[in-house]
Image (cartoon, rainbow, N blue to C red; front, side):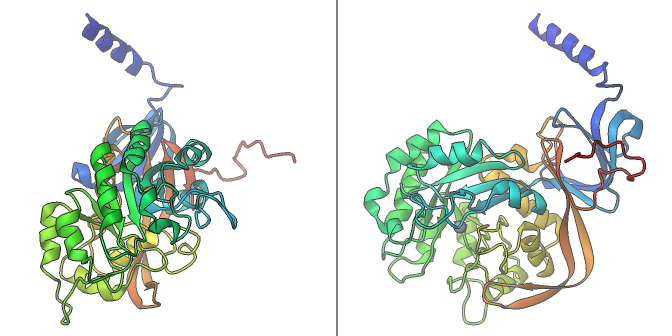
Length: 417
Ligand SMILES: [Zn+2]
């Protein structure tokens, strides 16, 4: 009886188009790359009520209230950046860190990032404030978080060296109370000759059943990186800043060390986390050429990286394109893979029924330069640009004004003051 009622309701609803049309918005003529659903070709994408309503080879323009021509462009899931810092309570003397954070709605849409994951800027102590001030207030960006295992979060290096403030129970408790937006635990900047910070983070990750991301920081003989990825991290845990120098990744002949394959076979994930000090072509290019690609591309977005070598998500993606990673794989590493790593796979695909978080990307051709955090440079003949960003079906960034109307025909209420 219940089922029959649902079927009737569905038929009635779908036979009454909203305002005369079936769809609110139609992205027409684009090349869809949706790695999770094995789509790589020309498709039209229709949106209704903030969700993907149809993905087909040809959807009639008359069926949509608004049509945007995206021919010559790539339509992909909204980019998922799993290494950002977004707790803007800036200024010297900030109690709970965040002084190097950037505002998500100011920075993410223009790089086609629809989901930004703050990783460890705050611990459990400041999380309720972060949630109220940033996560719930951001309108154009979906903000998620990994809690720092240090209760005080990233206040400064000294505060981050205090094991007494690393409480797996309290951290996991906060993560579980906000399971809708907390997707992991972060350990960062630990400088001591042991694995205490990593072990506490993993303990919290176990308790809350979420992955751990580790910024291993400095490389000490007493706590080898290989021990972390082979013994300390669990399958699904993430090592960020993977291409940071001098991580021990290759031998003297630039040959990849075998333990990396073993770690990957165990299920450990390797994330870029470019930042202002953690991405070097001398690590990245030889490994990429040997086929060891990152699982996820991310920015480590903060005030010191986004006007430096990193710039933004599409620039970091372009660096991997320039090193020879195929475009479809670069998209996978920036959408499907990171979304899956944080157990939010719906955000990394263009599937009917999913939230319409979409990136429209262009690939420019020419000669482009890219630098790493040490000033090391490569050139490439392609550069990815963000053309348009949609968040739950709303256009939140539109580089070439594709949603606009020729101004003589536009019926616009211009502001009078
Ligand atoms: Zn970071």
